[in-house]
Length: 434
Image 1: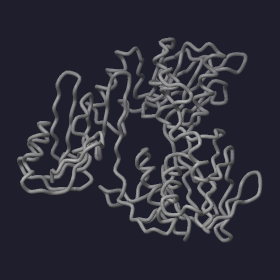
Image 2: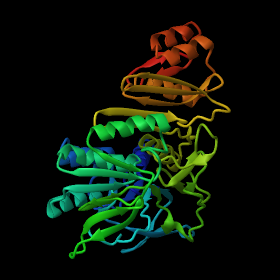
Image 3: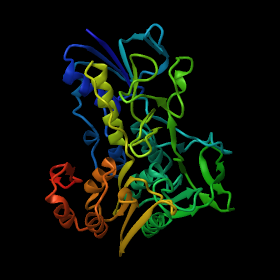
Image 4: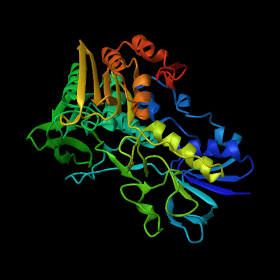
């Protein structure tokens, strides 16, 4: 009987558990989670709970007894100190080491906290976990917060805005070092549209600047934020959301190979036999570049975990590769990005369609679509995702119909030729299109 140990209880860990149990009903599975909860939750739902749109018992990503039904020894509030790969043991900060035959590391990311004067004041928080959200909401009530400053205009920062904006009780300011929000995912035009939308919702944007120092009151609580552009902003709460890095520091001395994240092969195994990695801490095969990259996206984490779990259980499975996809709802605006987001004029053709608040940008390399940005019209997202993943050459009629957003014509253009199934965005049907 195999002894499986999984470090981390989020999407990659869940994917691994479910894949293992599909192939091995009797192996011992131990899951170690540093979070205090006795359940696994949907991280995107956390901001809806903060905003009052979801109740506490709607946070579960799987039923609360999911791990019990899968016969998993689930241990919460456990911090891993290191991995002894020679003796195949997971070393804990407290308690006896945990032995393994197969190990999955799915420890996610750690928030980046840039050095700032006043960073030790009360009322400065990150927002990457449910515990963070609980502490933020508790601080808001305790301090009677009226002014919130969010440092970082990426997905985490805008998730904080989404979580707090429904309360209509805060003056909210987003501080972003770049010239626009979502700089890693959107070009200047699309980023401008999202920024304008935020302003219409009453959010103040301070771009091309950052926090110089944070000033506190006599109680050591946040009171005011000073920006490098000279502005001073009142604040009782500062949310630092400048990004995350793979949580791999505890692996020093383990012999596990690390670049930016934990390097894996196409089975999600590391350079150490029997040790696998998946999720935001893993640096795995990426479809478009053919290189190993960290892609911190929920479906990627789950799929990497499933591939790892299958191989851990002895059923070979090659990971097909990651593709950067993000779908995000922000205060009435729908956003989706697929694959490459920033075009290179020397090698890419760009097709843009704008109609009021709708913005659609498709990026082609020759006759292959390699990326897309969709704002307020996500129709065809499944078609586009499948085409980017498959790297399929498009004929002129197919390419033209894709640019025009005429998906019935798109299907008709290739219907006579048969081909592989292209999934719809909702994932409920497949259309023979290629």
